[in-house]
Image 1 (cartoon, one colour):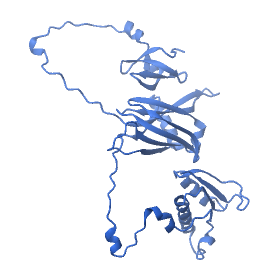
Image 2 (image 1 turned 60 degrees about the vertical axis):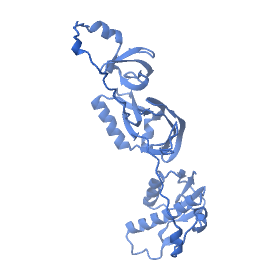
Image 3 (image 1 turned 180 degrees about the horizontal axis):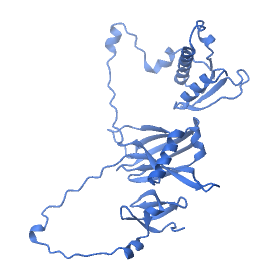
Image 4 (image 1 turned 180 degrees about the vertical axis):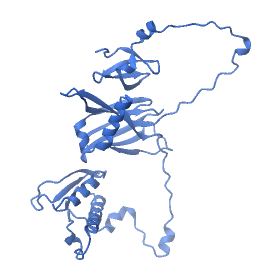
Length: 337
């Protein structure tokens, strides 16, 4: 191996000096330059002493005339951030056929801004929580989170974040949420582009500037009551809701009697609307779980519901397994609040 951890290096395209802090594989290393860490291919860096001995230094003596002296200091350029990024580094290995394949993805948070953030992070695979972390992302730095086996990409990973300012600001939002979902086809395309461009990693923007606080406009409702509108106290909102169910049957004959002449697309829409109704009631009543009976059939309704559940933040997990009442025709949803 040409480099070792701790070696001083120079970045060829920028002439910046740094050091090696991690060995990624036989082609890539993690380097640190001016306090910022990022991956680099070995052909993009070199030892600084090699440049000293191979590059000739020329010195030109110049006379300085009095009219050439600057009377004012040049204005300092203000630093501008480039936001907070989710940074993914593919780690390649060689298979039995001597072909390069991706073994895993190294996951980083990179902060280019001049302010620090507290954050909580959650990785979901197939809608299930598999990794959580809370930490502080300092200004102008990066934060290593963990590795993901590349075979898990087929489970539709979702990277869920909640940020807040490390130093609170009354004018800024109390928190900011962002979620990035990876699609297998999209990810494979990005990796092929990396190979073509000889780049080590790719990023997704989480936010450019931390958002301002939203000012909620207060509305005077007293006049509405005087003209006959019914005003409900938000603290008693649950009392006005229909009662929830622990299980909802989405077989079309359980929902409506007039279904036989309906096309399959309209039947599916009716079933999904019924699911949404009782899903929202379960969340409003803070139910711990809900059983959705969708039947077996061709699995179209089940797949539609599962896709919807993967993007719901209230869903802790869901499972389609054998039930003593419904067989394999039901999905049980577990909520988190």
